View 1 (cartoon, rainbow over the protein chains, first blue to last red):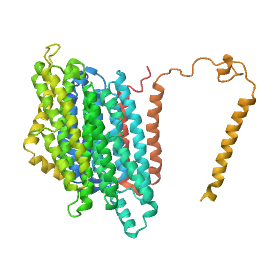
View 2: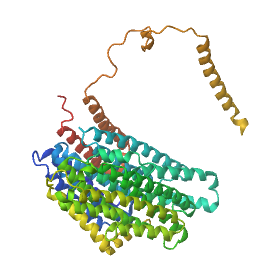
View 3: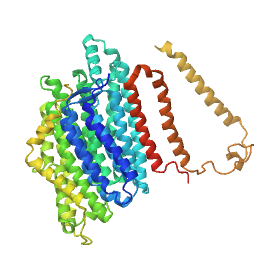
View 4: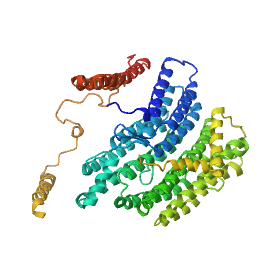
Length: 495
Length: 119
């Protein structure tokens, strides 16, 4: 009767740790509350250890899955949360209110994401998604005296609610035609109906449910045409939260999408359907994201559009999974999943690193305008150099991780066959991307600064930027252990 | 196909004709009344409205209402639990303790952060 809790250890631990953070803030620490960041980092580090030692399998019936895929994504969530927490210090000490809530909510949001990556059933997936997004609504509006931040929170809340409604509608249709909320069971029921040839009558409902689920989760991924909220929310939210949103929230949405698409709809007859849907979304995201990013004058908006485009590149891996599976049943989806996972890993360090530099810059100068980055190389050579590394990695320049990730993901799409046009769009839009990334580098190195005031960066933020830059170079030069890590994610849905 | 849905289409046409026809009739046949400031008031021949509907009042009322719902739901959840308590045995008891414990932390948080202080 009592379910096996051992697989839930990381989630339960982080949940209790989040409550601990709330309580520490309430009962102790009247003055020196900066210690909360270190407490949160300690909790995240312990959770990381727990994730590594947790056993694989299923628990609570089939609603919680612990496998290689969940393992990989949980590591990504924890790492990106660590970067976000480590770069929040100055924001929190300047605003001086609700510090415990800030760190506690980030941790609770991470718990939601971890449950999301492990969801084996639609209800638990939905609850985990809500746990993730509700925390993020509050965090987006955290600078409550700023009009922009309040606008960001409200916009995110309304569009998040609409997307949840669409997702639920799709789920209820799927439940209506299959009679189950469990992914594996849905898979079996559809397969059985196909074998008996009785699916024809309700075929449209299956596809409509699938479409609505993809649309609902695409809001979380912020891919075109479901991206309208992203630039405003990214600009208005506190920058550490923006950076968290652009990586962790996207990875969580992607994990949920993969769970449903492969777990429930991983059937030959459906693969081509959702493959082409995702391919269209990915190509639109790459085109619109990259072209709109060129026009931006605010670095957070530019990175927002760039992250829309990056989500498009990540989805190329998912498209490859659909084809690969239908052609080759013996080793399904391996290349697609591992290339997608590797891309997320590289994207996490580069994108969150770029945001960390933007945080350091705006904390000191109070500006997010690209124009103000003029001559940063003279004012702070380290910040300018690391920013260049991150931007070049995002653009996909050889010695850095971004190049390998793009190569890997395009290679998987080509080997899948039939999606050469998608790869071509990806390559062409990469050229546009290089233009706007390089224009920031030009601004930092070749434009004379207005003042030559030196930037002072707190040590924790410096360390974060340094580690992100180190990883961006390291994974680019010595990718083997990280490819092995990404390949762990391929042991999906087996157990 | 058409026969089955014909009544619905017919009803649709009738309702469009009735609604639109009455509107057009009153437009053509009705007397044009002169403009006056009373035309725009909510009740033309009622009591004159006092003040604005968009009155500001303390957010504390909302806060209390939200907090009430949380603990209200807690009690509501306990009724079915109490009914099947003898069958759930120790496991059910521990589950309920966990549930109450989580809400208790919430209660401590509310008290400590001063959400229940009226002034």
